[in-house]
Length: 318
Image (cartoon, rainbow, N blue to C red; front, side, top):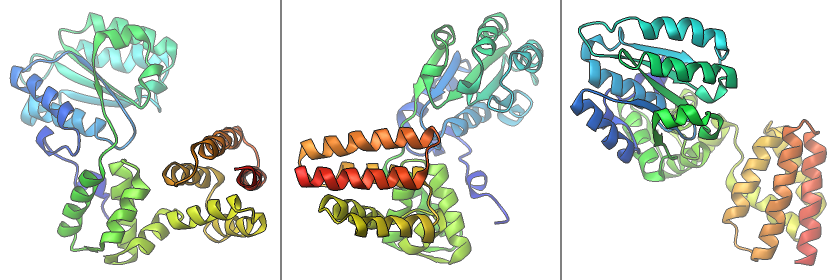
């Protein structure tokens, strides 16, 4: 892959941002006024937070945007020394090109320590005349309240199926790729509203074949086909534990999926499967328990087989 498509096809303006019309409409008012407050972008990964920050800077500053836009990834540099050093030093200097302010973009700000966030709130106040902060995070609850109250909060949501398909079709056209309808549906399933993941999966699939179908996508994304997961669940609920265990072996050994990958797909399939509410509630409750154990470091095989055994017992009762 000579070029990363997520950068190659990154939208240049707010009007080009996919699937976040409410957010971009509000941001355009800041562009038209030539001013903005501190901003907090919160939402799942791959939904356009970084893209919106860059597009906003481009539209506000024009050709001088690189001189007046400073990006830091808080997951790499998350201590109080960074706030007192790099961030404060950039914030206190005057903007370039006769602009009234410049922008510091803190990506993954929810990774900042509490001490660093406490130091940051004073910097945001003190240098507000020359610098505006844009904070990006997956979980706004991890940002301390004093910072949230200083910012205009923007909530990003996962992209819809139609938006993902439209953008992937545009890339496919420019890259001379042929995507079958089942391939597009597979990319939507794999991405779960994360456009960055969808574009990366498309690029990996394109390295395997110029004609992309569902099999190519699932192979490239190392994801089990949803119908296989559904068969696994239905088999265990019917009481055939050993056949279910054989299907699980195929997912772990032949396809190389991790326990967390499988548990997430089981959860999604359970939500969509038709069954009695009481049974579905019981199974999802057990899925949550097993997922917690896996995250804490338990053995994948033992925990997943325990889950299948629980499915078989619940199926007999239900």
